[in-house]
Length: 236
Image (cartoon, rainbow, N blue to C red):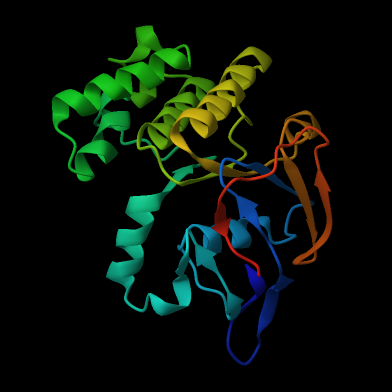
């Protein structure tokens, strides 16, 4: 991202992002931190092609998003390259945990048998092997959140966007989720951007951007973070 700004409203315009410069490398785990209302979710929405910047440039995996004009084209690129792990879960109540994870894979033209096998693997990795046949209303908040994480990772996206992905998890489950993130980065070439208020989670990321009043006020790189081998978003 280069110089990305976002303003809501018309005559009574409300600026929410100011001149964001952001680079995320391939396989990086990046945290966005800051107080509520600082612009983290607005930035996440633009990264996920759910919203468009008022000004500035955003390149996703070598593609200028400014050149993608139609909603259908943006939806297609989003489906191909991006996955979301929502704080509110957004599980379909009429489907089991297994089918909630498998369904997005079917939309990407995977057969049901392959989709359900991969979904089962992801749920097992997150400690939900015995909950695959359960419906969302039969699961705790933490279990639902883990189903949401499994669904996001099952599609092998290039970019995973996660809003407080460990907010409802106990420490053991949160650690399992972060280890699964690391596996996805290493094995599937996934880059991950997460919003978190948990400083312990942020310390385990390669890079931490602090956002206040719609602007990045600091960027911290972990001393052990490896240099990214490919660009995901270009700022040069």
